[in-house]
Length: 430
Image (cartoon, rainbow, N blue to C red; front, side, top):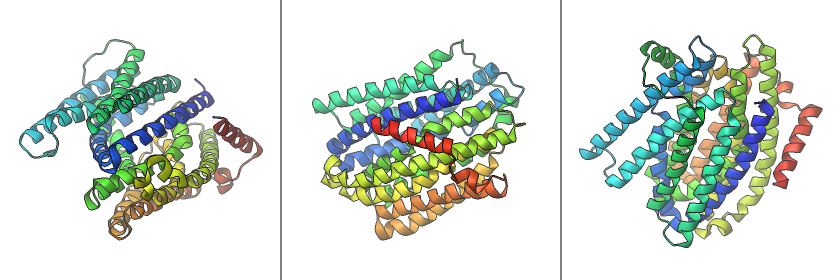
């Protein structure tokens, strides 16, 4: 499937799913209130983080070893799927034993514990399966699956809302549905019979390669989420509920980089490292167009923030300023979101690791200082500064080390200007 078609598919899917998520966010925020929304947000933050990072790097090594090494793609699939299932079982057992002996999750009953285990298990398997689709540039298939599950999720949320049965419990149950649907659908479409097999030599090599990407991705994920942990323990769940509205709105700005990131990673994995100029051209052009389209969306988003108290309710008026601050930072984070693919696909993930570690340290330090002083606005400032450092660090490395030019990264040619105008027109029409 072509690179442009994958981006177009991602783009359309992101628009629709973002619109659906926006509607769900309004309903849930109004029904649960800041307190209930904060409880749900913390639960999801904790268990989905375990689900996304409980593989310790094997998932991130999957595309590279199936495409860039002597290992057969099918061999990599069976080995890594077996490992993923094994890790899900081990982590689930640890959680159950910890809860039984009162060491962890004492505030949750066993229904919530099992729901959390269910969430992390299907999250981990779904993340693994999606890497094969990306490596083979089968992104349109994943988008169709995601879109279907999100439509069904919205329908169920709407039914619960009009029947007055939408609670924290039922909301979390509904959010588990897309995980099951996506996992089952992706596994079925890959076809072939699964064989449980663990190749220790392959796993050792994958750990060595994947651990760097794993730590880098964990750092940047925590950079996006650490402010929510700080708010939960410093300010409480009600303030977390207000702040998550700002986060969910600001992350809509990832519409464009989110549409491009998976597509460019798959394209770069399928390009030869012997064509460095072509790889540079693709990367710099993609960064440039993404940055300017994101900038246009940022301006539109800032103008619309005044509507937050009317759409979500007066109790969420405190989300206005944090949303504006986060918008500014995400503009620069869009550069990093695209740039990491360049080094990951060329077997140099340590560059991403060093940058994300720096950014994570900046975020932690500033959250610790600013949240006690200015509350959730301080969290937004800390995140926005770290996002800016994230993007600018890549620009410096591209220019100093990789010999990119500033003009190549930021000055538009006629064709790129036309692409931006076309993209904005499509957004306005939709």
